[in-house]
Image (cartoon, rainbow, N blue to C red; front, side):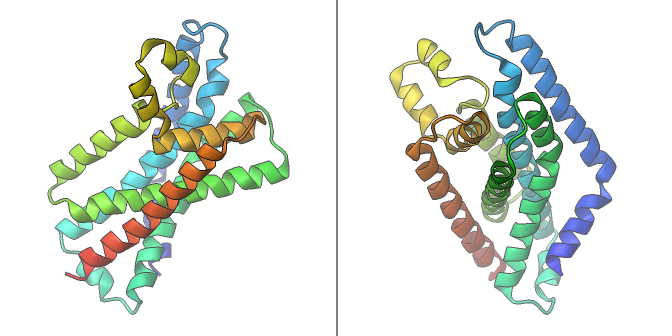
Length: 242
């Protein structure tokens, strides 16, 4: 019931979602064409494709978080909790709906990345789709944590912006590690390497480019996703129990 409701509301704003998707595609093309001329020896369009795909999934997750935060501020969540559903089913429904939205939201960029880089085999496509779904689920749960802990739209927007700056610009989404290492001190590189988004985008690129998959990235991705899913469910459950 909750899953269908959230997805129905998601598709209700299809025109706005289409505009956002196009804006991400434009960002991909503009940044790639600009930085390919600056960074020598790197096809930035291929490099940035997996990164911008995950950025779109992240953005979709925080749209869900914003909706949850607004419902909490307006006390509309009391009505939702009065529906004939178990509390855990209600929370999981919202989280899974957010993951599905993130996957749908990132599909145009994912398909574009496949066209630019290479068309993966069916097993790789299934693995990538499952990975993006679970990644979107983790990011939705992260947004749920922020939405249920903070009060006031300004606080939520500020927290979202801080997290966005850290996860996006403090990771390997935009720039390769070997180039960053030339300009930043070792401590900054260590912080960048343990960024959850770095784990995710490195893992994604390894599958797509058919390169070595680092166990460090796999462990980092798994730990982050498990933590976010459990903490998100716990935070939402605790918030709605008040």
